[in-house]
Length: 334
Image (cartoon, rainbow, N blue to C red; front, side):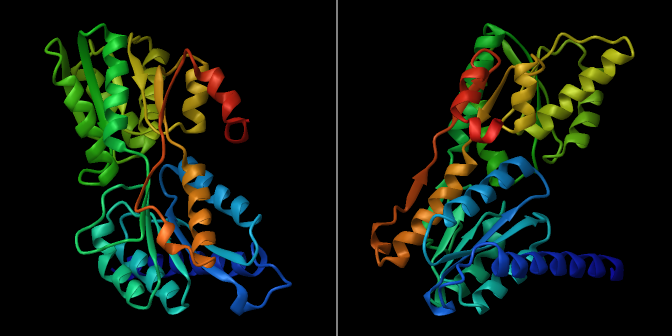
């Protein structure tokens, strides 16, 4: 217990050191006074899906650099399992009287009370990477892609790949988390309508590449005849690719296709090399840019014009069209 508390305090120290440094040297314009600054608290995870959230954070920094009198405090690297740290950070930013809170946590219900305190102080709240508000919290806006639609999209493509017949293994994220549950819901709603496609294994790997690799090795031993693996995010899909490569190195070859979700840089590279078949490309940079657009609207007194629900489009990127999308998103995949 004592050791855990020391670790948590160390994490908090590192996060707040980053925030202070970023506020002093990253985005503030030296020609303006503190009162003229519109302060945004931008809180996102980073322990997993780092490419996704790093891209979002980079887009925020780039967008705010083009705006006058807007400062953003980016807190990146939040541990999704540590509710205590999440609450502490939200409450700290509330005490600092930021003008807007933009928050991405996988369980918004766990921080509702802290976000309500922010709203009671007149701080608008935006939830990122979700389209479903937690019970008891009326946020200014929800910004994200539709995970259920994304699950349906990748499932339809998988049906095409399999020709309507085959065996699938699924590597799940953390059970109960929004993205995991809605992606699976959309995926299964499509697959369940094809009686000749069987999901022979569906196990959590908790968004972790190395867990996915080990889980996949176990699944392959029990189901050596599977035709396709779907990782509910790219980290787990890449873990599955590594499991297949490790098996091949020992002389065990599996004719298995792999699909993922997110559009991470490594997944795009795997598509280029033919190691994966598809991934659902989300647009985290657009989420980041949208936050700063909203901040600018609020600063200019146009808060009533902010949309309650902002759905960011998703794209099915495959090994066949990947080079087209690399050109379109050259700023990210260069």
